[in-house]
Length: 331
Image (cartoon, rainbow, N blue to C red; front, side):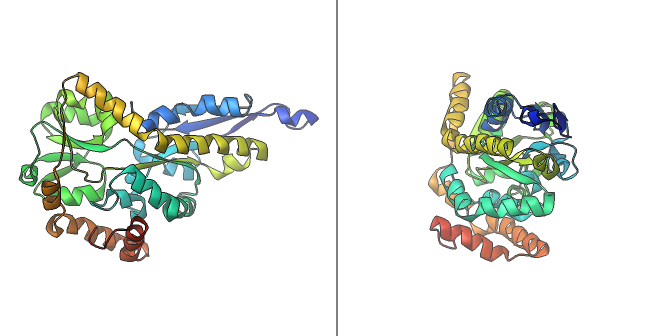
């Protein structure tokens, strides 16, 4: 937890120094890692060296990165909404097929109400103070064999990281497989999985394309969010001027997460193209086939059911998203 050093009980209290620990997950090449790894230098500069942040991907397991804040094991963390979507469906709205299809739509919904809504949820359910929101590079389907028709999903064992996409894969006749990141490459090598949905940037950096040479964009839950959180006890021990300086850094990081999105995705795609990867985007007619009720309906039904269990009106919530985006109830 937070460590204080310096002359806290003297008139030189302004010289007080602070050490903070920050947990992250391994996601090389993605804006997530690029920006979270920049936190120590940014905070050091903004606070004139008074705050030192140590960022580590080995402090807590990925699935515990949010609960570690609640339990006080770390001062800060960069948590993933999608890892929490099974427990709190509002964290997974961008995984619902056909709802939020690009980064502009995500930010529009976020600015309209979702960022503030999830700020409250982070505090109520994880006792976490939200410092910044971010977004992963476009999610694509890396597969050993081409998956260019909805019939191609049948029988395919595909690693998924959220319940909404799992429901769609099930409805298409595929077999969704949950796997932690360290197990993905060996699973591809051994044939445990036939492919996976993952960030374009992470898929490039971890070189999944060496085994899964087909990289396809079905716009199936194409976005995922992340958030930088702080433990309230750690945060409240910081003087107001330090809090203000760190908040300014976090505002910059959130801005860059969205403004540099195309840059992060573009760099990853160029690098893969240099290794012979050819990208495929689902044509409109095939995507329309995918968006039939029989394929995407189970995903929404499961989401609505979980919303009722959590205690809110899921259909009204999704309608609010559609109204912000100017979409009809049909998507």
